Amino acid sequence: MSRVRVVLEGLPVVAGAGIGVIFGIGIGNLPGWVWVLAGAGVLAASWLLSYALLPTPRSARIATRLQPVATKIRIGAVRLWVRTIVFLVYLLALMAPFTTGLRMLEVDSPLFVQILIIIVLTVVNFLLLFPLVAPKRRALLVWRFTQGRGTAKLLFTLGFGLIVSTSIALWDQLLLLLVRYDVVWLYLALPNADTAAVDRASLTDLINGNHVFRLLVWQLGDMVPTLKVNETIGFEQPLFYTSSLAGWLVLAFKTIVGLALLGSVVAIVQAQRARPDKPPDVSLLPRAIQKMLPKPPRARRPGAAAQTAVDS
Image 1: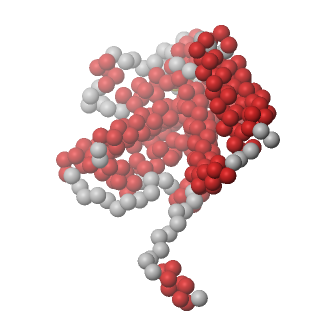
Image 2: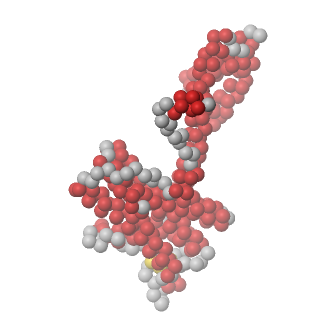
Image 3: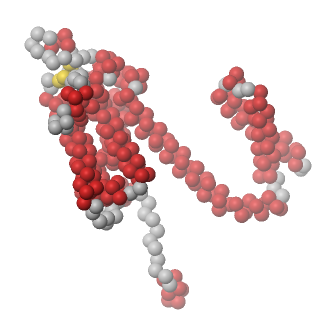
C-alpha cells in the first residue's frame, strides 16, 4: 500500500475533526488565512497518521523510543482532564451565589440540585478551613507564609480569598434553601409589629439584590469592632432576620470563618516579629483524605536490593 493512499484514507477522519472544530467556532468568524492554515494542518495531521497505519522501520524505532514518553503524556492528559472537570464543577458551585442567572436556575430546579451544591461547597470549605483550625497545620502554614518567597505569600493570599468566597457561597446557599421553603424569613428593613408582613423579602428580591451575600460580608466587617469597618465606609446592614435559626447560621459563619481568618492574621503578625523556627512538616489534609490518596513508594536503604538477592 502506498503512502499517498494511506494519507487519503486517513484524511476523512482528520478532516471530520477539523470540520467539527470549525462549526464550533463559526464559519463566518474565520478569515481566509485561517482556512489555509486549517487545510495545511489537516494534510499534515493525515500524513503523520499514515505512519501509525503504515509504519516504516525508522518510524517504528522512533515510536519504540518515544513509547515511555507517550505513556506519561497520556497519563498526564487524563489527570489534567479529571482536574479540569473537578475545577469546573467547583467553579460552578462557587459562582452560583454571585450570579443571578445561575441562582434563579438553581432555585427553580429540583431540590437535589441545591443539596448537591451545598454538599460540594461543604467538603471544599472543610478542606480549606482545616489547616487554619488544626494547630500544627496552622503553624506550618504561618511559617511558610512569613518565611517563604513572594510566590508562596501570593498563593496563601489566594487561599484566604478562596476560603472567604467558598464560605460565603455555602452560607448563601443554606439561607436561600431555608427561605425557599419558608423556614426562615428575611427582611430588607428592621421589622416591627406593623411592617413585618410588608417588608419581608421574597426569594426573587434576595437573588436579584444579592442581599444574602452583602449580609455575610457585612457580618465579617462587623467582627472587627475596633476599626468599625462598616461604619467607616458607610456600609449599612443590608438584611435583617427575626428567626433564631437564621441567627444560629450567621453565628456559625462568623465563628468558623471569621475567627479562623482573624486568628490566622494574628498568628502571621506574631510570627513576623518572632521569626520562629520551622515546625515539623505535616500533611495539610485530614487523615480520612490521606487514606483515600495513593501512598508514595517508600525509599529503600542503599544495598537493600543486593542483600535481598544474596538472601534469595
